[in-house]
Length: 500
Image: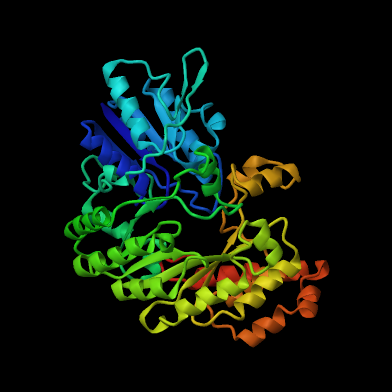
């Protein structure tokens, strides 16, 4: 079977789709990968994302295939829909949607796609390709929702989660029949030079000033945060065995292949949701093998509950140079709302102090916070700022405007309480970069680089002063100041960087 796999994500790494391509090729099918970075890219959300000429080139690339697969998250629903409609209008090739949004909202997705993959996709897509190749029925395949010609929909339950992630090969970077949409909308063959250029422009690559390779050593997350799709995905499998890890040898083999393929790789970006939650013995084995056989700087994600002195010492010795940790809020009330009550300020500060002990050997860590939460009061946001004033320097802040993604506990609350009235406007067309202009958000922006003196930030976020300056009469003025500051930062940031 010939299968076109399409990604609308701005990031060309797309670990899951590349792994899918490698697995299908290993099992005897041919894949064509097409990267169509959504031109909206968190800024201008219109319904039509791609130019007519781009879609004509895309259709030409899909005419000789037997199946088209599209991966999507919620923000790329409009892109997936436009791609699918263009393919349906010009060909009879069936289109299957997969990824987080397809898993969480299959009822919505099956309206546009012929088939929707719910849950992990490797085995389901292999079964689908095998069945189509044999001319066999596909309406009873596990993990797949299938829409028949008469509109009837077969909704098949997911199969048990595969525990052995070593079954899957390293992501496909072969460049064989890989295509990419460049800035003017033209789809061109992916070359090594083009690949390396884009590997240099990722968020962490910009921060570290090196070409980075992004990978994942496991799937899932040990936490159940109410704003995160991971909790919805756990519920699909009754939360049994959702967190899984690849073996150390499997990960190291992949990274050795990458070093051989891309000798200029300057660091490895481990994007597991909570790499620090890997069992201690496995983490120690990883650090030993990584230091001996890879020897590149690397970055990873952490949570306040998983950072320990022992793990930090092992990881820094192996080459860890950058950590991103989700704090989200300094308010006990909001921490409880996020199902993160155990990640209170005491544990946050303990984790930050452990990370800070290695400041001489690392880049400043990044700490994530959520803003513009409909259930948050001004005092909650000020508490977060007062917590930031206590964080040991240096650090960077990454404040994100909350998006109430479908399938999450907060989305259900938002629908119930009237905070989601128009799904497109309030969720699908909203980006986590679209932060509101307000006095607390202005303080976040000013404190983002970690250079604001703690005593000054505590004063500006103190209860009496903060409440006065965040009051309704002053909001328009601070909104203007906030927009002006963002515009200035956008003008001053380096080419290829991102606005604060």
